Length: 96
Image 1 (cartoon, rainbow, N blue to C red):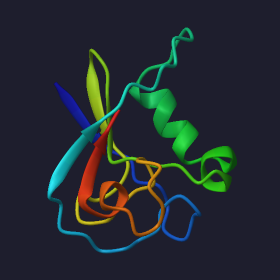
Image 2: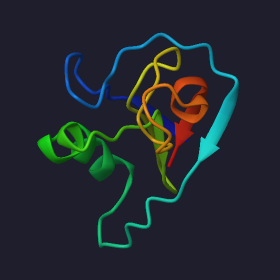
Image 3: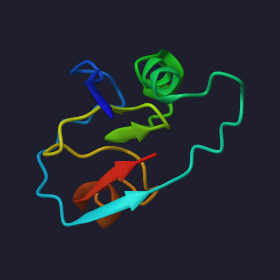
Image 4: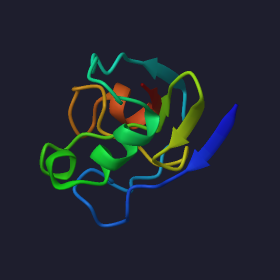
């Protein structure tokens, strides 16, 4: 399986940059059933303004062909809905 590192740029609203020591893995389903909704299209979404303004981010998106990594595994993302200090966001690796 192909693995691509395509990080959200530093300084964006959805790349908080807080250092974390992962303790958990959180797995979600994007629920995006649109045609072409693959890992690469989600990488484009995460680098866009809508995701930065939300803010929403996660570490990896997997599809049937590849995995795209969006954040370093030692930085937190905004994927659990438990706020800036919640254990989901601050201690788990998010996979979609």
